[in-house]
Image (cartoon, rainbow, N blue to C red; front, side, top):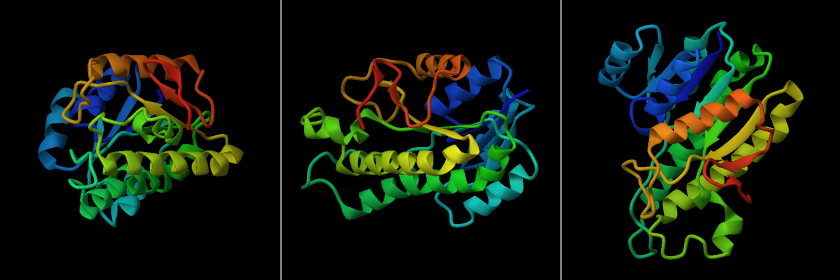
Length: 231
């Protein structure tokens, strides 16, 4: 049985990913922020292991190391995310950027560092960072986000996460660890874009199929709707 770690697994895409990966036989290791979320997940997935910890806490990385112990991890999905509806310079605040950067970028680094030993125990380890089309500098420069309503803080933090993904891909390929960034599609979630149309369940099924196909390559940046994206 393969093991998968998913952050932000209590709602939205994270919850859908837990459902879909459990259906194809993965052992679930889930990270959530509250005891209530843990209890709700265990009522649905009694065989899952659930860690209660905020991914932005200073002690998160060490908590992850201790929790994983000597287990092997085949897939890590950095799904926990944050967004703020402040799409203009006038409406945005430095606090928003700090909040999104901590969740969407720094916490990804903490998850990877905390799970690295477990990933090295897998025969084909894979890190999936849930990114966004709005993190593409190329698309931003081509005015793809202009008038979209997407916040400064979300775009900047996802662009930073994309750079982190590329740094990790360079560093970890010597260990046989692939690192990919995934835009999950225009999802109907609490952080939905104005053109959202896809359910988290549909997106999760697409990602499961990609993982099982073995087609994901190190340094890929892929939209589950349209295929490869420009960095």
